[in-house]
Amino acid sequence: MGKTRVPGVLGRPALASVAGAFLVLAGPGAARATTNVDIPASTDGGISATVRFYKQTVPQPYNPDPTAYFGDRKCLVVYHDYDPTPGCGGFRLDVVLHNVRNQPGYLAGLTSVGGRFAAYADTARTFGCLRPDGAFDHGTSFVVRTTRQQLLDNYFYPDSNYILSWDRNHDSDEGPKFYMNFPPVQVSCPDGMTPTQFGLKVSDITIGIDDPNVFGTTTWSTPGPFYG
Image (cartoon, rainbow, N blue to C red):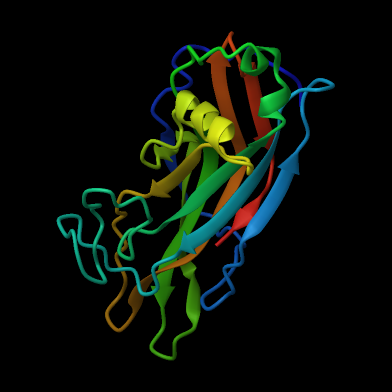
C-alpha cells in the first residue's frame, strides 16, 4: 500500500451487475462480528489507520419497502440516521487515524484544505428463496455486485477539519466514519417460497483524501473481504 494520487472527485457512481452463479457467503443466522483491520502508514512517520467493519445488516426474510422511513421493512433514513436499514440492509465503517499530531502541518497549526475524506468498496449481495422448511434453495440464488461503491458519509465525521479539531482537544485519536444503506432489489420466488438475502461480502475498501496541508494526498486500503 503506497501513497497515491486521489482525484478531487474520488469516484463515479458504482456499477451494479447481477450474476446468476451463487456466491458462497455467510448464510442465514451467521454471526455478524465486528472486524478491525490495522493499515500501516505508507511512509515512515506517516498516518496509519484502523478500520472497523460492523453493524452488517442482512435482511432475512427480504421484503424491503422503498417508501418506508420506519418499521422492520424501512429502506429510507431519517434526519441524523446513519445506519443501514432493516429493510434494505448494509453496514457501518469507522476509521481511526493515528499519528496525525506528529505531521508537520499539524505541528505548524495549519487547517486542512482537503475538504472531506471519501471511502469506496466493492460489494456482493446474494439473494434467493427459502423453501417452506426454511432451507435456502441454491437454484434460485443470484448475486448483485457493485464495483467501487462510494460509501455514505456519517454526519460531519469525514470532515478533515473536524478530525484536526478533535485531535487538538482530546487525547484519543479520531477519524472519518461511513455507512452503506443499499437500494432495494427485486426478488421473485415461486409460490410457497420466501425471498431472502443469503449473504453480504465487502472487499477492496479504500479511504482517501487530497489535502496538501496536513493529511497529504493519501489512500488507506484493505482488501478484506468482510462478511455479513
